[in-house]
Image 1 (cartoon, rainbow, N blue to C red):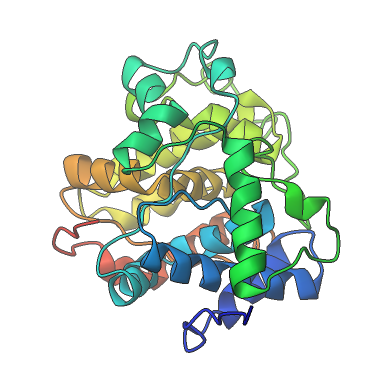
Image 2 (cartoon, helix red, strand yellow):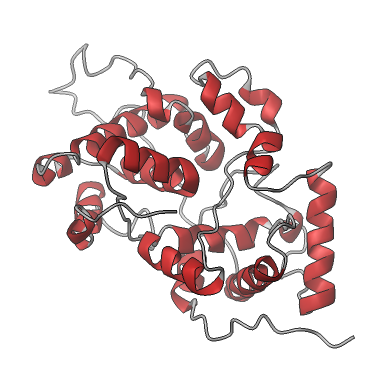
Length: 304
């Protein structure tokens, strides 16, 4: 049987490949293969939009990196599918979420794999079996094999959500100067209602303490909500890498991010990806990232 090419060879994803290699603990050839899986995934979804196709974890990271370039991802979706392809945010261990006191009823409903898939017009009787079928389809139709470390290519974000970062996030117990810390600063941050699901997601993805995750979400939520006004410069003061982490994980639940942007800001807030969480000092890195897309801060509503 002749192998099919993705038909999307003209889709240049070299920058995505570079970010996957620089951000994650993978080989150069695996980052290249991840991008090829992503191209073939797009081609397969274009041909069979109602079929559940599950990517290996490494290829899913490539999808993440493209999604985080939000304006470009909209353009790619429009060109390839004629509509926006949402990234579904849930995991196979849904029962564990039932013990998360931060989650509200809406979060629990929308993070339920069965509900999330049905909302996208998909269904699954067994996610692990569907993943293995997806791998077989990629092999039989596109000739794609497993990469340098075969066991890693058998992992999925559904059941092993933690990132294998090339440079793990190092979080001090408190990001406070000893001379300025006070009792108010050290109070545990309260969950932000519209992001109540996010601290637990960050813990599972990055393996950082829940206290640090909550602080990052609190900081991000203040930045996000402040963008209803034009006081951008004040928002940037002291913004940390935890804030960027929270922002990126919010974006990766594409449907919820779009809904939050439209309902709370009145417009879609675009984002440009960073190559690494450690390439710049925290506040400077966030400031540089925000300044690059400040021109988007008053875009009209974007339908996704």
